[in-house]
Image 1 (cartoon, rainbow, N blue to C red):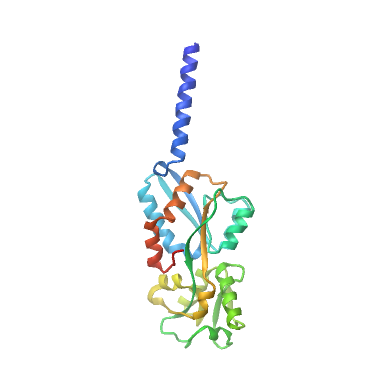
Image 2: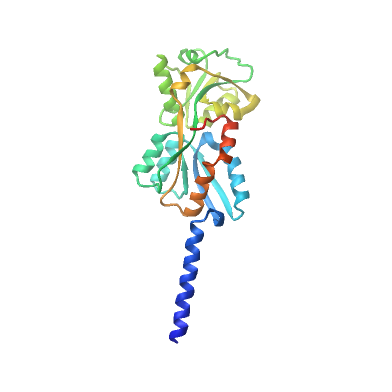
Length: 253
């Protein structure tokens, strides 16, 4: 009896050891990894998610895209997530201050604003100064989200008081106003202009250089799948992922 009990204990120890080894090995991850990511990452993260799943056949990537401020609030309220990718350090700090990250966030890309206008530029928009005029129909992001905060910075630097007709919940919502022809211009990220293709035109402006957004990413302390979270963060910060971001118009840190 003693010999049998000893064998059982030894077997359990071996199984536990194997489980621990698998948890730390990105090549053995499985299950679902839930990623909360800024709306401006929709296209690139969707592509990277497919590549990550191909490299890890036992993993499924599920996304929650939205305004970084709203995502940070959801995480603070206990929403189940494995990874947070923010469009601004401020929202990541909010999550850090709540003790919700397990490692120091890593800045993986940068992004800057660009004016988006409908194809053909029917409103005759020429630059940032047009956002101080009442005639054109204009869209901005809400001030509490990263694209809205960046817009406030450039307007202040340029001495312009913006006259928006609408403030949208995130950058994709602002861009949609342009693609549907509901506004003459919106201030979005240049990556969103590129992602919209022929439906919009982009107008660069020099003040954008003064409000470049850093994008940090980190695994979350309450991650249901911590092994997959670590592997996903490692993949997003890899050179392979970097090529995808560069092609989309992001800047590398």
